Each structure stands twice: as C-alpha cells, then as structure tokens.
Length: 393
Image (cartoon, rainbow, N blue to C red; front, side, top):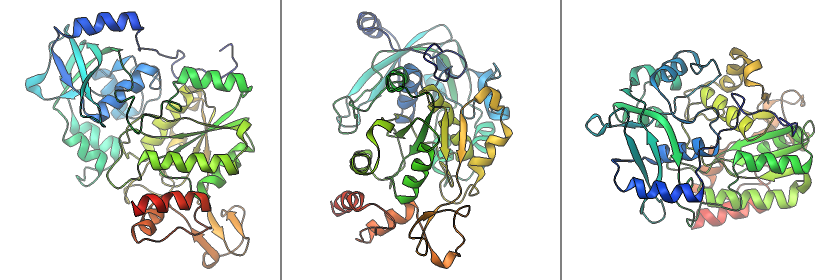
C-alpha cells in the first residue's frame, strides 16, 4: 500500500457498506423482499464483513470455503482463515438461490427490528455441524459456549455477497461507542497520520489488569504504536459489560500510557471462545485494521479448560506466515513478583512461584463477586475503583 501499512488480508480491503443514496434504494427494495432475522452473532458478523474487518470476505461463506476452513484453516483461495463465517437458518426458512433477501437485526437496547443489509443468495447448503464443531472448538461438549451456539443454529447455510445498509444497528445504545467505533479504513488513516509503520494490537474482552498492561508496554517497546482493541460484540453471560470495560481502558490510558503512542478503538465482533483458532481470526482482523504485530498471551480466547495454556500461540507455528504476514508476539505467563516488586515472566524473573501473584480476568471477577476490591498487584487503583463501583451496582 502507498501508505506503507500492511496490506489487508487477501490483498484488498473490502467495503460492503453502501452509500446513503444507495441505502435509500435498498430500503425501498427490502420492503418487498423475503427476510431473515439475524442472531446477535450474525449481526456482528455482518458488520465485520461490511466494514472490511473480515477481508477478503464479501459476504457469508459458501460450501467450498466452509469445508476448506474447517478442514485446513484456509479459504478455497488458499488464504489462511480459521473459523467459518456462516448465515445459518432453519431449513423451512431457507431462501432460493438467486433471491435477494433482507437481513434484519434486533437493536439490543430497544428490541427494535432494523434492516441491516441485503444478501444476494448464491448458495444454499447443509450446515455440517459434525464437521465444524470438533474442528473449530476441539470439543463437542455442549457446555462449551461456542460449540453450544453452533449446535443451536440452523441446519442450512445461506451464502452470497452482502450490501450493508446500517453496520451498527444500535447507534444510540449504551455500548455503541461511536467515538471509538472505527472501521479498518479509519484506523489505517489514524496510523498513517501518526506516522506509525508498525502497530501492535492488543485483543481483550476483560478490563486490563497489570499483566495485560505489562504485555502492552513490552509491545510498545518494539512497535511505533499500540492499538488497544477491545471486543464489544456478543460475549457470554458473566463477562464484564463493555461499557464498564471502556471506562477502565480510558482511565488507564489517560494516566499510564503515552497518548501519542496509544490508540483505543473497539471491535464489534462476537466471541466464539474457540481458543487457538480464534486467536488466528483475531490476528487476521487486526491485520485488516492495519496492525503489523498481534499480542498473544496465555489462553487467548479460551474458556474453561478446553485449551492448553499456550495452544493459541503454538497454532501460529502451523500456518503459512507468508500469507498471514502479521507477526504474533508470544508472551509467557506473567505475574507480579513480590521479590522483584513488579510484573515479570519466567524469562525475566528468577524467583519461585511462592513469590508470585498470578493474575487473570477470572480471578478479578471472582474477587468482585465476593465484594473484594482487586489489590494494587492485580489492577491499577483507578481501574479497581471502576470495577468495584460496577460490582456494587
């Protein structure tokens, strides 16, 4: 690219969001079209396709891509891709090939049914869940939230290019974060204006505790800038709400990060909790946003004990990095060492486990549930105050 930034995955940054004039025409057309009501995950996926975060996808996947992704973590084109992006519906509601279908989503804050886009149906095929679930999630346990979600989805997949009319279906909702809701084209422009050629991305669905901060600042030492890029799409019950998390990110950045070297925007994707494969998807997404490096810590995108501690790092060793291009930054499990008086890892600290305070988002949530304020070794005081206030209601 002429800007000097990393190219989008597949070579071209996709944009399927229509202009205002075209949106008006599509809205008029939609009134006479058959329709599909999207789940929250599907609505998030449609936004991600539309804004180019899922480049090179221009719509929901067809059968060839689906099978290739499940079996070999590649699109039919050969580009690395780890998780199917599907529009699954009940068989009785499946449209016909060649039809145009209006896609409606429900605004979380109001429950209003809103037109989000239109799909031109190129394929309708069976949703092979027996292929998808064990390959993507490494389990068929219905207790796994991502696997259970797929189990409950429709048995037929509708594929084809989409035209997105309204990417964010709840722009007035409390978790729209319009000031921070930047498209990949917009973040790339931010990086260009700041003169950043190398950008490290930090993925999070939790407040940033001291271990996260340590990883971020290590990455800042080797990159021109840091993009703190929290996921604000669908998450599982029990996760700390995105609004509370955003307050924590903002207060932390304001006091403890260099403003000229740090950016905060949100990613409107849905969590799959697919561990290693989702780490690869998160890396591809950040590549599309213009990042050259991607922080991969302990148990990235994991849930429960379905994945090994460093499976999400090791999976990158299996990939065609010449195609992926974005560089994973693989960090050891970090902890607060009472002897060192700060954050350390096995690579930097000689002291035994009896001197360490190991941190995790789960531990923070457990402390809050007990009415305990996270200590300084867990969270910055300003962040702890925000979390404690939320926990008290």
